[in-house]
Image (cartoon, one colour):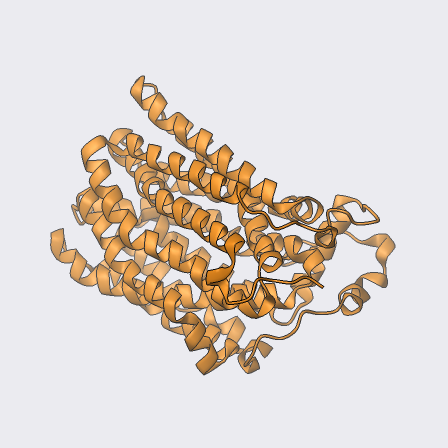
Length: 440
């Protein structure tokens, strides 16, 4: 039986290192999230479709490599995967300011870096979400995820404003240096974690099956689980329509609302007050309302806020509309994510955590490049404002799968399924396991 440090996560040295790594890298990522599309728009004068294509290639790896990544995360030790992911992203992002310094930066380099960084992020994210249940006690998962979300929300609160100023001062490509440096810092913190990863995680499994069979087991587990399949449907729907907004929002802000990078960064900063508030209060809210009702309420309340954004006035006055809309939207988004991710981690046996997370990533983030592509095409065809309206309407629908599912009756975190119940559906035709694609 594994023993965790007592006294809560504040006295858990290895969790604090993971938390520190998350804090550093999340703050740095705010620079790239703002600087890369602004480099395309301002420096390279990219079209609406070219900018949306940048978002597509960044998330395309979640469609292409998520499923095999989950198998490797279950087979291998997770801490080295986290370190390698950070170092790879640092090196790739550093190539952008170098190319800009030699007047050699092109949209194709942004696409290439975005795609390769996306691959590294797939492995990092799957390993990261699978590593937390190994690092902390199951009863502390919501607290752990909430603290990690505090880092992300805090970075989103302060990062975009500072990133906007740096972009104004040094240019968008140069601002990417800050993100590259943050990934180096994150790698150093994770490298310092000392907790031993035992064979129970799957890297020392007695029988090594074919990758296709292991992927099939992960797909069967998620798509057959009454909680997971409905959470996946809810999140995937929101991500698809939310990506309509992501594909054209910065172009809309620059070309329609006539906002400077510093003002755009300030808008994101104001909006993320809601995210930080949710990170601090998610544990209390889920305890008060129950796990299932919290997930459902958050998925209902967030969507309508995005319908306000396309009606923002021009100039600095746009902040009066975009700011409050983003405060409520980010609050409900973070509340939803902390609760549903903790639920997923709590109910899944340890040996299949990597594949569960990879299948969920494949489904819920796989819709993002599709939404970016559709949003970019619509933005070119019907206009930026009209595309934002279509995306906002779509964001009002995702609550339906979880509302009409067993999730609504869930009050507390259930125990993980036993190995027998996990394997039972697989033993029926184990010799003919095939990779199932969602929706088929």
